[in-house]
Image (tube, rainbow, N blue to C red; front, side, top):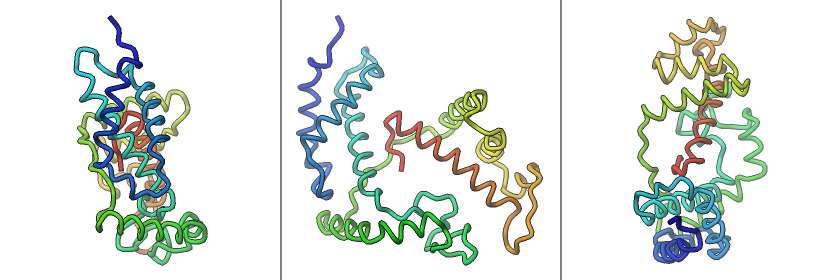
Length: 231
């Protein structure tokens, strides 16, 4: 006998109420828990076909709910975050391999836009959240991922994207050389025929970074769709 969503809803409500203190939602001032509950329920309803009916429902839905809430917190938190955090050119400590100065600054159009439009809001949110959390930024731990298995599946998905003309062949080749064959940047640049006239810059560094960012975004899209808390 099939189980309807209405029959499972009390379990979902119980999990949401039970774990509410653990998620520390008060750190994000504009979270409305009732609205959040409805959004989570819709998400679970849309994912219900992925539940293996031979296994218990509660552990499965608990993980789905947890990941969805963590993703929502992350998205709200990062809405005003500096774009450098998820950028391939970010070398840490305020350094950037994209700009001529080597710094994270206005030379990057995305950074310039953030500094003008979002910086003040982000710094304000950071101060409020750290104060409310006793010095702890409210992020959850990412779910464990079998990286090699995911790379094989990502390879298959990118091949499909390539066949449908959603992906450029150069991007796919750089993906293969970087993550499947695990070659160095110099070896990849040589295979791709890249050259450089810039001092202290590897051949084709901008092109490699650009194509890798496309792959990174596609991988992130897949992981988030499958309820991993990918940060």
